[in-house]
Amino acid sequence: MKYLGLLSSLLFLISCAPSHKDVEVQQLYDKVMEVHDEVMPKMSDINKLKKRIRKLETDDPAALALLKDLDDADEGMMSWMADFQKYKTLKDSSKTAKLAYLNSEKVRIQNVSDKMKQSISAAQNYLNE
Image 1 (cartoon, rainbow, N blue to C red):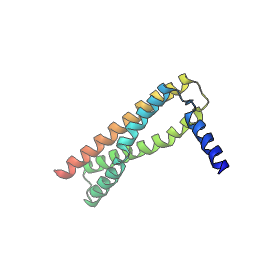
Image 2: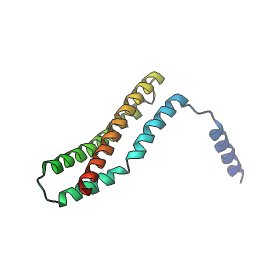
Image 3: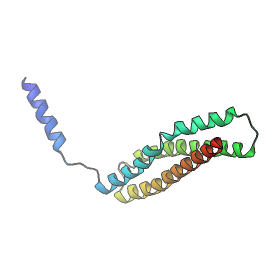
Image 4: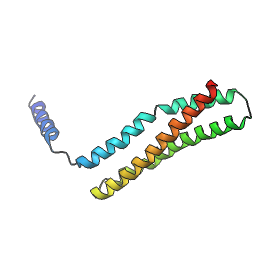
């Protein structure tokens, strides 16, 4: 019982310790992840649309272009996620370095998001015609 009280006190002190994360860096990181989290579920939409277009068994140049766009959007997200793992290496870097990296990644993930949404919309329009 004595140890439980000591453990509880220790956990309380740890939880009350000030955060070492910079608020500005955390907010920018959250914005980057917000864009990612919004479009990541659309990966399944991309795969479903690719299957539907392939089922058409057509050599229509428009269908082939849509498949390429969907593949490129899919690959864009996969590449971004793999590259974003580098953020962990900035753990001991300066605030300026972290902000610069996150700003560039925010632009990259927004471009990925735009590409995904555009390719999904175009494929849906093609299939609904």
